[in-house]
Length: 353
Image 1 (cartoon, rainbow, N blue to C red):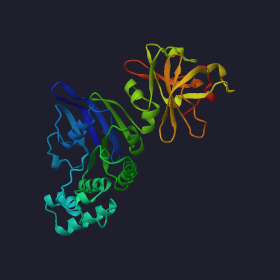
Image 2 (cartoon, rainbow, N blue to C red):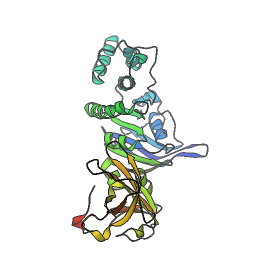
Image 3 (cartoon, rainbow, N blue to C red):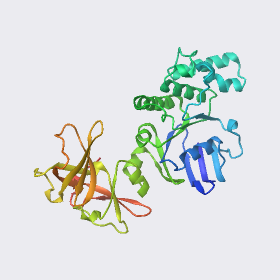
Image 4 (spheres, one colour):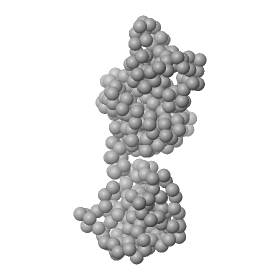
């Protein structure tokens, strides 16, 4: 592994920011640290950079323990959430700053800055100041500045948080392509699961200072290992008494279930359909516009379920009676999430996401 954290612990007063954190990242990977506010993800990033020091445990970069190394000795490029550009410096001087601190030759600096500005699509803006740039352009300057000294590792703390939604989506694709071109091992912090899924090669899900799960976006989404991951990823409904749903019994030791919208299908009342006996009556309680679809909240015998409806279909109305089938759910105990299929469906007739 190129980056390794071994039994890392960090406490701030009574707050356990890192609780026996361990993981490894391969060289050249783009990895997301994903979790809610206060889950410890930024603390992990800052400890790797050397901006915070762990209470115990070891951090390795390319086989070298960096516990005692200063920030400037770790070969880290850091991109801050608020850009942290020098407002009185031009784009050129911001990007060149780290190289000037290292007292590189002037020609070397000019060549490197020119290469980086072309890489981040800012050629021709060398003489502008940060206030003359858009949010997306300022973030690209921050990326270029972090890359200027040829770091071993690039760390990004919620790099898109200060940018509007449209530009943020464009920058996600740009960042993934850029990291792929230069091949630098990179870690970025985010609380946005869509961002993590779209950009990262692997995702590390954090919660209350612990690593809940690590894997590819597909693995994290389809095979959550813990109740937290099952609930945090996706727009899920958490219910009790899930044995009241047709086709399900209580799973041993699991008193709750997590049901994602794509596990649920609603059809108009009285529609002819297969597996008629597995459908239950429900009432549409809420209809919410979600941009490319409608999100429905349906009351089925006192259980509130979420599902989505395509605009290609005639939209359901609030208060409308419908029929609902649940294809699968996650039954959860205190430690694990178990994927349970509807018993009434034959395996070769399963609905897959």
